Length: 261
Ligand SMILES: Nc1ncnc2c1ncn2[C@@H]1O[C@H](COP(=O)(O)OP(=O)(O)OP(=O)(O)O)[C@@H](O)[C@H]1O
Image 1 (spheres, rainbow, N blue to C red):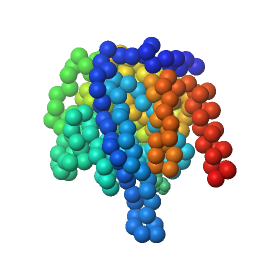
Image 2 (tube, helix red, strand yellow; image 1 turned 180 degrees about the vertical axis):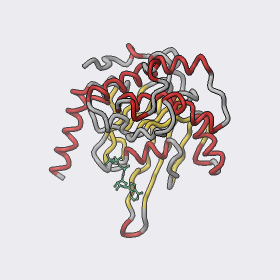
Image 3 (cartoon, rainbow, N blue to C red; image 1 turned 135 degrees about the horizontal axis):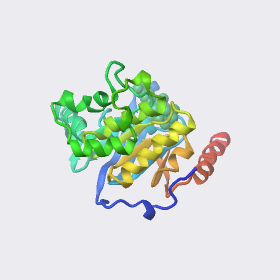
Image 4 (cartoon, rainbow, N blue to C red; image 1 turned 30 degrees about the vertical axis):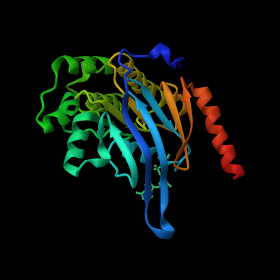
C-alpha cells in the first residue's frame, strides 16, 4: 500500500505557523485516591497544512489530548491555542462558536443522520449555523472525496467507507482551520480505511487542510507527515515521515517497556 515517503514530498503550499498548540497542558480526572492524570504538562505544536498522527498505547491520553486541543474537554491546567486564539481563556459560548467556525470533527462512528441524503448531511452543520457553503469549495471537497455520483443517496444506501467519506466532507465543508479525527478508520475494513486515509491525505496535499488524527493503526499513521507518541500522558517521541513499518517498530517498544515495568 502506498504511504507517504517524505515530509518534503507532501509539503503543501501553505505551511506557516501553528494550527494549534498546547503549553504545559494537564488534564486530571477524579479526586483523591481515584485521581487519574490523563495528560501531564504536555507542550506540543500542531503545524498548519500538515497531517499529524497521535499514537500511543491504550490509556496513554491520545483522545484526551485531541479533546483538549479541540476544546471538547476543559484543561485542568496549562494553555491551549487554536490558531491565535487561546481557547483555555474562552467562555462556553465563545468556545462553542470557535468550534463551529474553525474546527471539523470526524469520529469512529460516522454520526450521519439516516433520513438525510449525503449532500444534506455534508451541509447540515452549515445549515444549522445559518451559513451558506462556498459552492466552489464544496464542489472541490465532494470531488476530492469521490462522492459526486452518490450525493442523493441516504447513509443506508452507502458502504461504510462511503459513509465515512461523507463524514469527512461534512468536516471539511465549512473550510475549518483544523480537522480532528478520532480513530476515523476504526470501524472500516482495510480497503475502505485506505480510501478514507487517501482522501485525508489529498485534503492536506491538494486543499492545504490541517489534520490531526488519533489512531492505533500503524498503517493509518503511515499516511501522516508526522507522528506524536504518547505514553502515560506525556509525549515521549516524535517521528517525521512515518511509515507503517517504522511506527510498528516504535509501538513494539511500548509493549516491551510495559512488560518489563
Ligand atoms: N471521563 C473520564 N473519567 C475518568 N478517567 C478518564 C476519563 N476519560 C479518560 N480517562 C482516563 O484518562 C486516561 C487517558 O485516557 P484516553 O482515553 O485519553 O486514552 P487513549 O490513549 O485515547 O486510550 P485508548 O487508546 O484506549 O482510546 C486513561 O487512564 C483513562 O482511563
